[in-house]
Image (cartoon, rainbow, N blue to C red; front, side, top):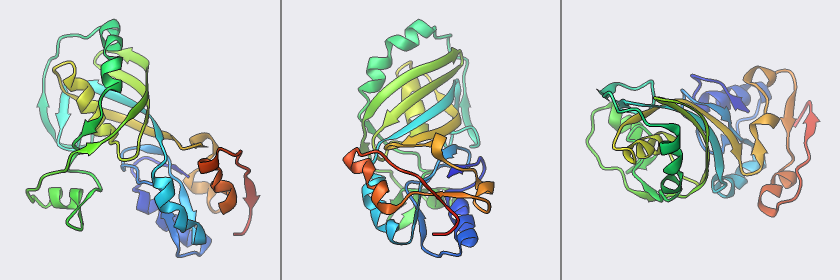
Length: 233
C-alpha cells in the first residue's frame, strides 16, 4: 500500500481488514502519520513473515529544514526552538556526507512507537510521563543529496532496521552545530519491495495486488518477485 498523509499505519490496516473481510492483517513497520509511502501488509498466514521482514533495509526520501527544532522531530510537532543559522553551502553539506554515513547510533524521539515497559513511547510522552529512551545501533547504508536550497535539503537514504529518519535529520544538523526538522517524508522501498508497485488506499475496493507468500520470500533469497492480480485471496 501507498500510505496517504495524515493516516496512521493502523488506519490502513483497519480499512484493508474491512474491505477484504479478513481479521488477520498486519504491517511491516509503521510510518508516521505525517509521512507517506510504502506500507507492506501481511495477510492471514503471511503474518508469520513479520519478524523476518521487519529486518529488511528501508529507503526514504526526506525534505528537512535547518533552523527549527520540534518536540516530535517533524513539522507537525510543537516548536521548541528556532534559530537563524549561518548559511551552509551545498559544497560544505556534501563534504559532510562521509560523516553522515558514519553515524551508527541514535536515541529515537520520545514520540515514537517504541515500547517502554509495554507502553508506546508516544503515549507516555503525550501524557507527560518522564522516561529515558534507550540508545540503539543503526547503519546508514546509502545517502544522497537530491536537492539543496538552504535552509531546505532533500535527501535519499537507505537505512537499517530501527533507524528513525526524524532523529537522523536532527543528527545531521548536529554535524553543523545546528538544528533541523523533517518537513516531508516518504518511504520508497522496503527490501526489494518498491512504492512504485504499490496501490492507493482507494484502490483496495477496486483491484488489489496480492503477492503470494512464497514469492514474498524472494526478498530473502534475491529471486525475482512475481505479482498476481487477484479479485479474491
